[in-house]
Image (cartoon, rainbow, N blue to C red; front, side, top):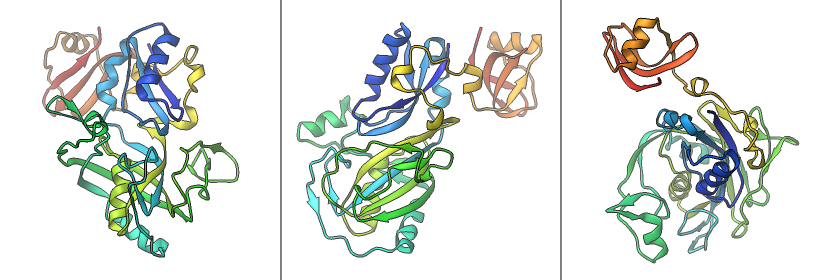
Length: 308
């Protein structure tokens, strides 16, 4: 069964999309490889039926985003859900200063997640505690931000571009036009392209970029344009879920391939650790069919997951 890249609309939760996919595909077995907030849109990767086996190998995929970071106003949710609870005047900014700040956020780092997130501490969801007026002590998590590019500075999110070239995801006169959340006011806005590793919160990045510039900030809009090998330009609209052909498991796994013979395939399916010189994570195939995902240490292969 297939892996599907869906274009999640504004205001739906990732669980809403999974529920619709279950109805459209006539199955309960649907999972996703990385949550998108209700106020974010773009690529949500779904795995259907037996393809749920590949979810664990896709959760660490890098992701690309377009982020509209509004300066001078903070919110409890760190995005445009609001309400604005802190405000400050924004000094005149130039591109060089903003690029310098963004460069300071690239690379491995520790990031404090938003209070309004699904992280659990002591069996409690952070967002549930936050909505009840409380706050959890959320420890910083190790993340990697691979690249941040400033695409422009604008007087407000309303004045910032919303139409982009789907090949480059840079502002363009025609192409893919996005719907952003209702703005909370007219606040100076940075348009940023980001490539990040697993577990990165763009809402936290917006907060932290604002702090580095000396002002409160929130995420005025967010679009995920890529997850692993899945681009938004190839994503299926929500109403196309029932008939979408999707991508087979083998194509969904972004690892180098070892072509096995019958003996190697049999031993891996039996959970053995056959001798092999490969080092790293590999997909093993037999006559084009998926056999296993393995880790090699240069001497033998260890099965991470096998397919019958």
